[in-house]
Image 1: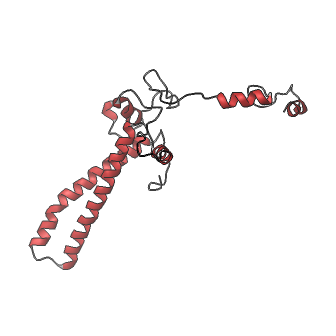
Image 2: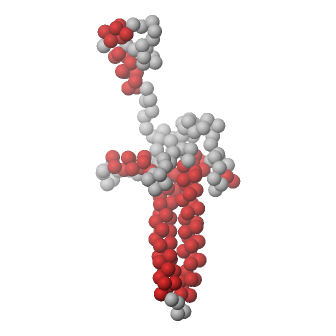
Image 3: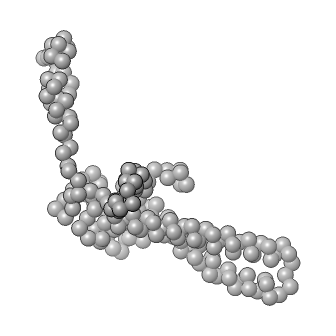
Length: 187
């Protein structure tokens, strides 16, 4: 994300989401509580600089509140589809047909609560607290019995065909017992 100058991934997705959530709350608070100051400044004879500062602050806070609230709603939608921003951008640029379906992820859970738990953690009471609540595997295993598979998961298919053509052992590198000349002559 160029706005926070950091990469948003599995381990810090919750913190980014909470940053947006608390920013939306703070901006909404500023917009709605500052409105009384704007009305007071307009009714009474206030100096020009005071009136300008109050109106400028209210206008800026309204603009930022609309922008960040829209961005936060977009990220809620992405979270419920088990997508990151870069996955969404990649999938929407590939589909140019207007009747194409809305992109989802192969890691989408069967229910929306599972998708929310993937980002905010399993413990409901820690969802709005900025603490790590990662699963015991550290987020390295995603496919489970409740995962809906929407794509073909042939992970090693291309690797196996290349390995068969080159005659290299399973690790892909020649072992100490195989001379290098024998490996290059088999190609």
